[in-house]
Length: 316
Image (cartoon, rainbow, N blue to C red):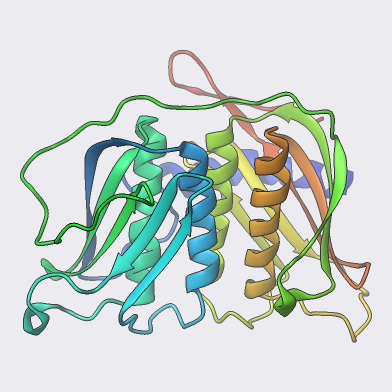
């Protein structure tokens, strides 16, 4: 793992700034918008829990990726967790049905990603509406709000420009430096994550936007498509995530697929970073039936200086 990490640092220092150069600050994911699609993002006044925004957005991407990237997404979908004080809901019931363009899964995932990244970039966590448009016609809407907010009729974006207040959060002390997570989902029975904090502190925003970037990347291919590796980059370009398949795993074990990677990252987000309230460089191994099938790490690859320029990180 250590030699792989050092190699990744070298490649990251050379390549990641180039990958992100054309996407910061307006389009944060390395994936471009599909032709004809754009998202209108509108802040509202209600404050919401930043942790709830990230965990539910990661959960939403994991839950909604049951169809192909370019398939039409019809109806409604929601992730609601009252404990985190945030709900994320999508509906295509906006405006006259005869005037609504079809909305693909890719539009929903990119719109949600861009909305959460906008919150992160501004460090402003307020309720938000994300209007999904195709060829300038609204076909769907995502609402990020408090879960007990009363229902309101969605007609279209307002002309106001509401800015949210700063509401960030940092590390909370914990005594756990390593552990194991067992997947409670029956679909992934036998899947587990061995994890260990090992390194420097990373801001929570960096950790979660790195996960979101990797999650959206896996969604572009079929859920059951095998992946030898996946990486993600934080919205600032300062933190990277790598997951790579382990060679020589017995044939009866699960294959490393896009679906399995998303499930693993969801477990790490929920049961490591969220539960521990610690945001530190992390090593992890993904296991099936107690045998390792993939491993990965979160790595701080650069630091932003006071003048806004990027400095190079050194290997651990």
